[in-house]
Amino acid sequence: MSRRKLRKDNEDHDPMSMVSNLFDVAMVFAVALMVALVSRFNMTEIFSKENYTIVKNPGKENMEIITKEGEKITKYTTSSEEQATGSKGKRVGIAYELENGEIIYVPE
Image 1: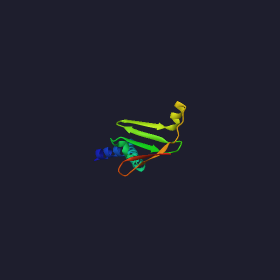
Image 2: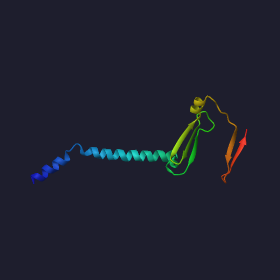
Image 3: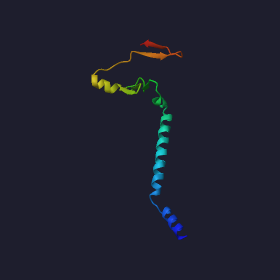
Image 4: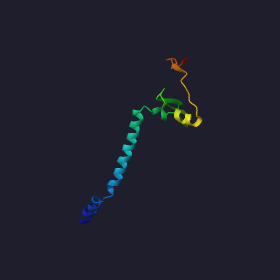
């Protein structure tokens, strides 16, 4: 009877037994946070195999264009390109996409 009590007492007083549980909880929390962020910002197309283009802040000075072609993702910012070439661009028109997928360009 005393051997059973002794063995049971050693298991209850192990201070390292909680470390593995904390690691599991942290991993579940990290995965849940990543899924929540991806769904909140509607960025699910990043994980698809289709090619896409995202325009952030259209028409403003801090506009960014993000394109995905196959496995390659490129990010274009107007400020970095202007500093590299020394030239600036200007707005020359507006493009509209119709419901049937046709794109119409209207020069200014």
